[in-house]
Length: 278
Image (cartoon, rainbow, N blue to C red; front, side, top):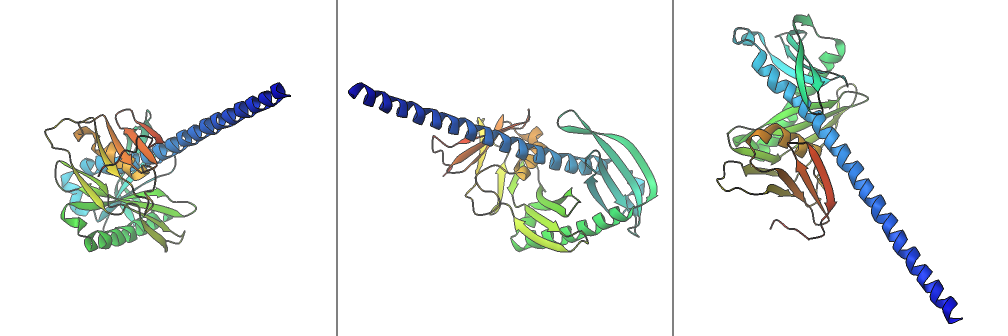
């Protein structure tokens, strides 16, 4: 009778351990899937903004006085950066970029003096609204002293999803936070606007000390909750040439996100060591 009881107890323990093992494996797979999703969106934002950076340098100085503004967007395959004339109806220049490898883009076509499509006119209208909203937000919190909002049109269908991320005005500054997520209805009407981080975190990249990583903290009060965000990924990719460290961490009381921006690779794990930044 005692042998049978001991066997049952042992079997129950084995089943308990096996259940814990399966739960741990499943949880790890969920974190890996989440990491891949955040990284993929961050790369998409990066490519979109990189198209704007490259095309800005591609507009000849002699033609810049003809330009009234610009916008960039993706059709899911290629990336377009368009510089519009004073009428907002025609493109002085339209640059088309194609993805290269798992991260970069390359210029594949340059067009001049072509009319905007109806959808492009709508995208331009949404971008102007996003610029106005983000500029007011940045001015309200005093961000404009060190950064400007860069507008990224992430999605155009079925609704517009638009991000504003900070662009540094001075060398040696890595601007984390100060970002917004805006959604617009198909007709261009604002649906909602959400701050992603609590505030702007200006990190100095010109420090002489060599460290293993740079880091910032997430406290879970905004959209930036337990994990690194796609806007964090985008910003770190844009500024990685100025960073000495091999990785950047976002730290939450439950999770640590490690982004190796030169690979690029994002790892999210539990904060077992209870790492804190302050």
